[in-house]
Image (tube, rainbow, N blue to C red; front, side, top):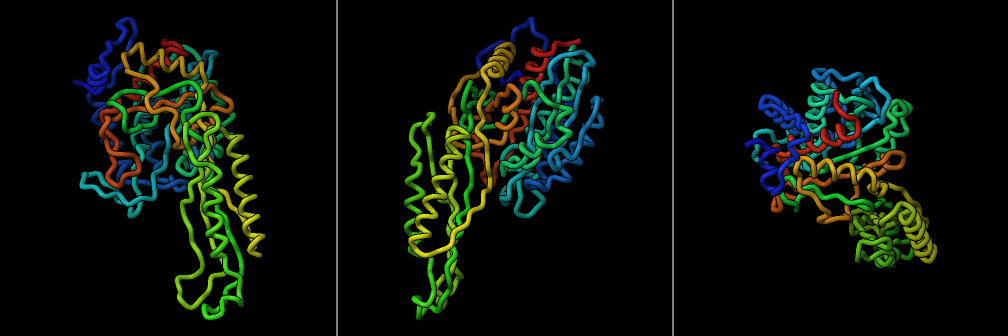
Length: 405
């Protein structure tokens, strides 16, 4: 039983026999699985995906794309399949980067890079796109263009902005954009999606408090941030306490605190507090960040401290376009893929939302099994049976929008 057949059995649906499905061969599946596992062995974190990009380019050379673009937004790669006939440009996105987490696993293809691992499924997402490229190359679309986008630096929220800001991205300028992310907690082969909010906006704000060190025997000779930190933590938490994930959702999470030196003889003279801010929209995120800065300034002024700020991991909200969502749902229904909105929207963020600023975009959350390991676990590994599932969904979307020669 192929992975796609298994998916259809589990979904309880049968594909529309009037719709052509261009299946991957067993040879394809073997080669793609081997490639995915090779990617898994060589993870690179955000901004460092040089070797990963090289591996993708080499794999794309075996697929007759119209053009391959490299260096997009840093290490991004895009493969264009141009029909030569006027029509929309449909982009499918995967991510190049891995996580700075030590993999703890006994699989033969375990990470060979200390402290880094493909523990979020990006190796599988890339392989889905390569599978799609094989299918489109064998049966070209009738109009428009298909773009396979391998985006860098998704995990820190910087990659999508860098890609769309790259002058070369103008050559792609997609009208439609789709992405699949594996999401545990859902049945195998089930897609969760919806129009509207899928992933929250979020921002990491580093707050630096500066005073003056002193001898621990004479703390009055300095200016310690200790009391300011104690006041700042509950004040930040009060900015957003979570609750129902609607338009008013706000959540502030203090994630890291550091103060002074690890010494018993020095009263501290500086401190850092990291807080992650989550909201249901980009505008609300900006407002919440301004409020956090204001709170920190008030606390710092009261304590006679200096204060500074730095932004990290700035993610736009992923908002699914209604038309793109309808296209994706129709495509899945036509090939018998079970779908709904289970578990959506999510508090977690995703760097796909930026592509939706100019294109009609939809994020699809693909289930690996309800009890499958969680993302970012040290023993997570992408389930290879999902490779043909994701590529089949993408292919159906492409052919529904662009036709087939």
